[in-house]
Length: 160
Image (cartoon, rainbow, N blue to C red; front, top):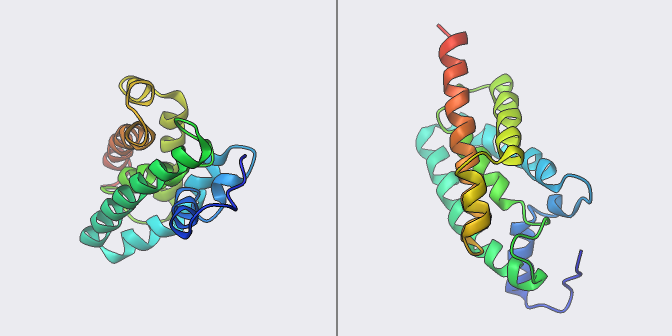
């Protein structure tokens, strides 16, 4: 991991956002830690209602895309492992139409991580072909769609 001490305040702010206040700097499984760090935000967004959840998702995606662009430049990598704001956007999308409650948050977490790691088509294509920061964000959003659809199917099966 490259240190970022000599950068401007806006670079430092972008890196804090991109790493979700350092969750992405945890050396082992930063994507998993980033997704875990986003769960309290997801819980709060679900409790606040659909419109707030959508607004939080859009804000995280837009601000996260800017932060990911800065992080890619600072770390001089296409998709630095420290960048986990894309996981926050992906899990927010996963849980957008999910039932509320911690069991559904954990199910969404597991499904999102599965699709984010597995990267079935087109997740793998987006990850490989899109330039940063678009590829950084788009593959996690696609994984979020897959996980969200699976979560809705599970909800349909298990809820009356």
